[in-house]
Image (cartoon, rainbow, N blue to C red; front, side, top):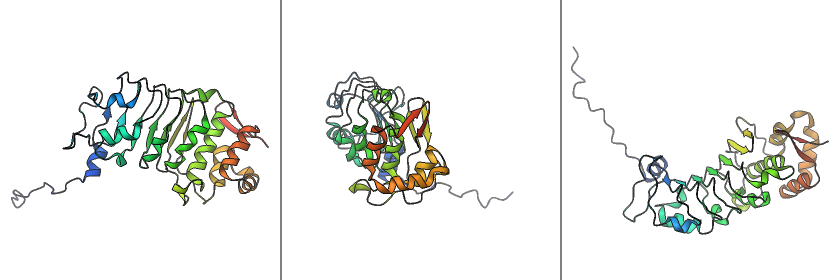
Length: 258
């Protein structure tokens, strides 16, 4: 029997850095607290029923995590959210998953744009009625999952079509100072009512056109779309297509009229 390996140490000296620890930490769960604004949650104890344990508290009495769950409360706005995160999180810049589902939020606050690493945002089951208000999320270039179903915007004409166009604009067009370069689209799932759009394996040509015609109707109308997208800037396209009825939601499939 070979005993040469009997005393070999298979342990590793590798130690996770601060960011890695935060990314794998349990969520900070403030769900089901009946809070009407985020400030009411600062001094409350987080839930551990779903997460088993709470994130580690640091020496500054803040939580080392990158995930916050605020679902199933009575929040009507996101006012004060940035200060809330600075109070409860060890490093708010690492925030990557935010669950605001099943509240009464009617407007997406500007505070949300202060978290550039946000990848998952749940907004379903709220009172958001103005799709133009959602446009401020264009600054979140790392977004991968966004949910909007269960909001009053579902009842708006052309909702699904305009939401699809909006999400394409965000990730493929030079629409804001924060996204000067055309980024590789990272969004993987967009939930719009009964329809789920999965952005997987899309080829990027450096323009808005390619992804648009692949999502909507295929390659047949490529030339028509190229002419349209070259003529107008991003926000003008959204307005024209929605207001004129050029884009329309037919069942679960958005179509564009000729």
